[in-house]
Length: 483
Image (cartoon, rainbow, N blue to C red):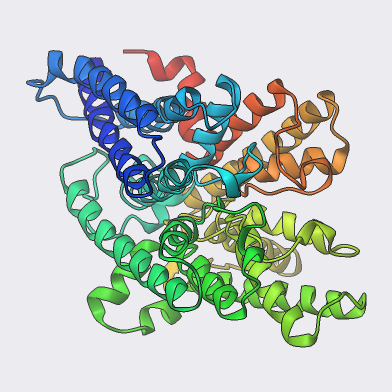
């Protein structure tokens, strides 16, 4: 384990992160709010801490190994989550303590979008911008992690995409070519964000709200500048724009890169995970639209379709923005929406959940096992698109799904011990582990009233869900720390 190199990298990350405190200062100054001090103080503290970790080891030239990578990516979200809470703790405009501030910060950086704040409409715009910015930066970090790093670490079957992703080397070491991948991903991520903001602005949002919500939408984050979320506007054009860009954020960014490089949309249609993900979206939307009309909910057909599509896109990718009060939907609908988040978005996306590719492989593997029952001596190759899937990938996928379900059950029981009813406990697990951010039951209106112990458990689940679980769990194995 190269602790000097890890300290150097973490210090450099903190130095870079310290400069993200400057845009909220500019926002405060432009709106003459006088709320610059918390961000300037946080900038100085973060910069000083980063330099103290980086300077002693800046000449270290060791090569980062796979085990170092596990520790670096875990520290990335854990440390930045705590540091990101500084402006909220220092600010007099945000009445939160340490637990709530860390919860809000980690929720933003992991693109979860669960919030303990209320009266958001009346917060200073600098604070609102900072919350949205946390999501956007976290979303980019998620993309780089999912596309450039996790496949090389072999996390839960993600190595399936190792041969297709743009940039990383095919060996097991973390190499400088990740920087090349990151540049391409930054360009695509920025382009999509700008396009989303311009459309929001054109369809009726103020420029400030358009920028902030483009951050939240593309990062599939869920924070909003209004308590009512997207229902604040009740605008069909805004809702359909959000639905489109949420789905774009929920797709594999390596696939976006392939489309951009090939100048052809056919790359989407050729991708089996894309087809599986969009098929689920259409099926869910049809079921929920029919459900709303069957229960005679207060929607016309076009509104039922719009709100169904929006909620399905938002819940299934773990975004958490809402165009209406989905928790008040009749019958089975709120529960179905919550359960869609367990499958989540595509691999290599900003979406949460187990990822569509894993769900697709589990489905195809189950079909293969049914065929084997009928033809015990038959030879059935499992193919996903044009790829033949090796058994080691299937074992990794099943292992991941098993651990994911086990953790979900354990934490559901733990949440009930804090006083939650079962529906709320399941919802809290989905909101945090799937990086969904919204809930039903007692947390339908936010997470401010749950206990501190529940908030810390949710914070751990947010990080675990964002790091694909194994990245975090491997740190607790004795073998990991052996020389």
